[in-house]
Image (cartoon, rainbow, N blue to C red; front, side, top):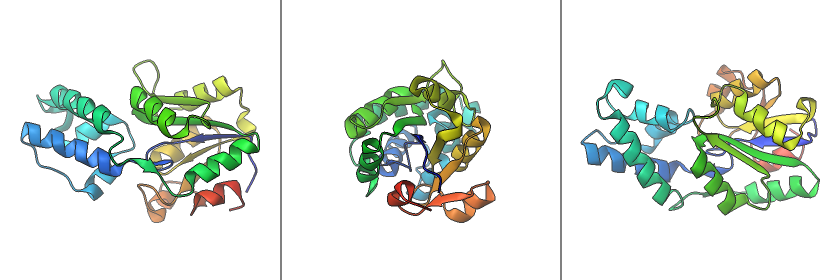
Length: 215
């Protein structure tokens, strides 16, 4: 695989295992409002498009539910307090980032996770590696729109010809396509290979070491 100069990573399901904390936070919120709780596998398929879409998928009638805004606020308040309970880097991630950094690569995170949480998690786990961290905010369109990735590239002064996006979902594949850059789809995250292939995935990493070596 081509050796890139700039690597831009998704966060949840790519660098960090966050599913337990997301599931716990969703189910805490469902209990508060008397809605049906969700299994971890159900939440796995709900994530990827930001917290607002997660809430929309988790409650009856989605955005049309009169409690939507209250559910969103409760989830955000709880998750920001509990986002580190069980969240952790996947095995091999720190070594992969260290390898890339020591080889002079530019590294960023672009996520559909709420901006404050994205920045906090990157500071906690990857502060010495990640130069730019961008999450969901009202100021910029989220993935799969290209805006957040293009903003990261601008801050890094990256060349699109030598930049790659690394993610675990169909949203990441579409985002990279919309930016005109390749996407490495990781196979340890929230989507399986058949699903990723069906959604346009063409380059796959079975382990973090694949990203620093040849695939």
